[in-house]
Image (cartoon, rainbow over all chains, first blue to last red; front, side, top):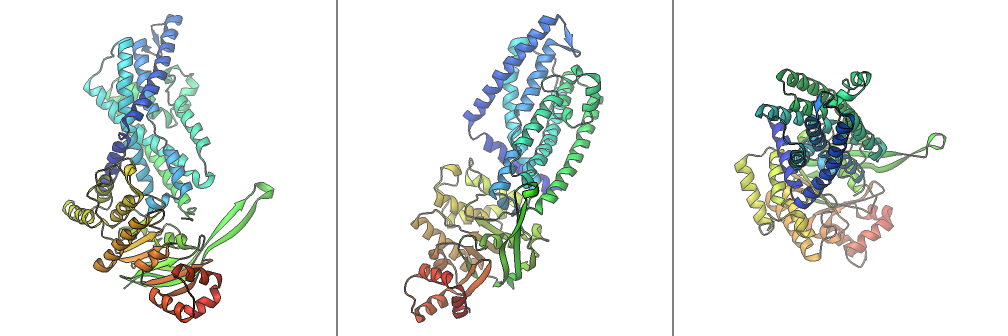
Length: 266
Length: 268
């Protein structure tokens, strides 16, 4: 077990360093996110001002804008793991991965975590500066920051499993870009990136909490804005259950996929 | 002990084309009954034209592909049932696929591999320093891989695959696209490692220079079958006796043109 954790940590570290190799590219991506974020922030400002409401979904304008900043940072930090798996399968690079004494799914998850952690930190820093300039700060404590970090980590792992399952579809479909598009839109909408779950119709919210999507994005950010140890434990339980469930699905799909490997040619 | 033993190893792929009522299924036979024994410490060249089944055989020997039928033991392991144990004992370089992290220096990939193979810190450092010295990587070990020449990159690839002290090194077209000087240096290094460390080398290549320089034995396959299995020296000798003029490349081309007759005449 320790050996596996060491392998995961080693790949995560190298992946993070590899992602920092091009600071210009990282900055370019962050600037793109900043533009999108600025537009959404202005939209929410207009919504509050037009409706005359001081709270929407139990959130003040400042809380809503910070919610949007962090959810956007999480969503935009997602690497395209599906494309990586897709390419490994189609080009036969999978062969290089399989001759190493490390599980391929774990390699993919670790790779994804390293890349994502770098992107997330950059996104959050830039997003926080913009939002702070527009609406000031929201109450932050080391406790809420620690909870956000842990919940985000588990959210990232959960998302990596989701992307891995979609990517493994390449063994049957060759190209999984269509599935990836559907998956990301589900994360965007049901993960509460655009609109917090409090603003969903009641019936929809009741359904969505039984899917993994709110635990990727909404859960960690809601906890940051409304810190509570009880809520934190509930969220972690939900995340772990979803990780276990998606982990089992990924293991099953990978087991089926292995039998279909046809890494021939070159 | 034998490094590789195969008995009637076969691999076929099913290929489906068309949809619904127009769907057609066909079977492609990539490897058709390969029986082969490679003693430990031997350097074998596995030669054949494109689509002959070389890479498919290597992927079966590494446990990546499960054979349709037949038996194989690699270093005493059943490759597809004991793949996790086997991969710790073998090194593999696929000339057209890289294990190095493109945006990072080779040293970072080496460090990562040390963790993946669970090498002790001291052991790893000693081994890495030895490989850096022998493969002459010192000048560019800290340069991002994307800035290296193909020859430098391939030296790093092979050094990386030797970090965990494998007993068998599988090389799938390692000199592809490399210039003459770098190619010759690479051959010398593989040879040196084979002779000094007793490393078994299983090489596939289209380059007859690789075969002549690195291998002592040559196995020719065509259409998934072995058409010749003999020592490189013996093949050259027989060629002279049969009055076939030219170098090894022409000889191989001649054998592929007349596989049945040649294999009967040259099989060792």
